[in-house]
Image (cartoon, rainbow, N blue to C red; front, side, top):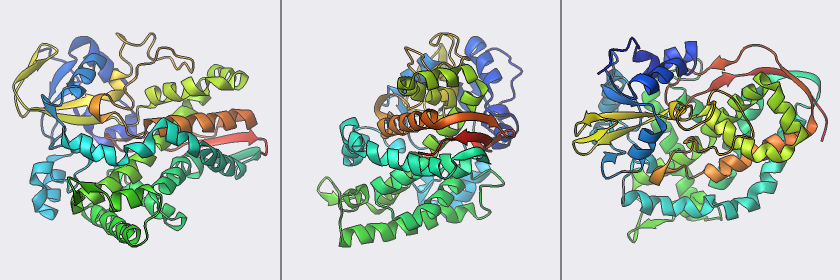
Length: 417
């Protein structure tokens, strides 16, 4: 095994991500020298760092060999212990009292995925495109004018996908701010600005909100996804309590935060690559391919954990049953063996087989929605833009699971709609 002078905490510690951003230099070395690398970071369970596109894809496509349970993501041993003390019944779920699609294996996964699947098909989402356009127009209108200064994350990127996912789910507009706060507290749990001191109370607060929503939708069902889930059945029975509430947590948070990060990092990429912004302004039809390049570039989901079910082999390394494998998607999306000039941001990149939405059975349920939201935003943005520039440095979120920028100060001149 190569003796690399790479500090594994650079790969997993949220404070390192806050200070340094994504550890692309370390991932690049690992892809070249030891793409299946054993890590024993202080304070964490040991794991295999999986950094090449082919290996991430192979592991994700073999759920019989690599389970999505019990761990979803890396946490410190101390954090796991605290969660187990708070939720002792969650010992077989890595201490997390959630049973979500992303932690289910076949055949259970398919059964639960089918409940919401119809709501996220491209043919259905076409009917929502006008509404996404309205949301985009309203947000841009609030910041139209000459040399307008604002934080792109808190003023636009956070609200753009949030409003659409809340409408799909059936969350009232008055509760959008609550969902935003809870989402920030969940994915920014380790960030001093976004997290909360009593993190053990976060999930109970989320569960309480969604329990009340379930009761409302059972009493008065509508056409929204909340009504489908609240009144849905698995094997002829109502969804179990934890699985039902976990479904709401997944849709409300993952459907918002990942797209928020993609939109923010994408905006920063356009600022850093004015030639690409000019190309998009000259040919707005490139918004579709630009959306995929933004997802590749941003890779908002930094990692997922898989656990080996049996003794096996990946990349020439002997993997033992019970070993954790950490799939690093931003690394896979910069793999030199797959992408030509992977550290170049190209809005017309084709082909673009990125894994930003995952691969295999866990391919992102909302991928089509995210692509459409990004495309619609880009189309309106470039149609109205006169000039744009950075108004300060972006601030990284202290997060190693789902991450990006928490602040992006900009200055632009935007024509009125």
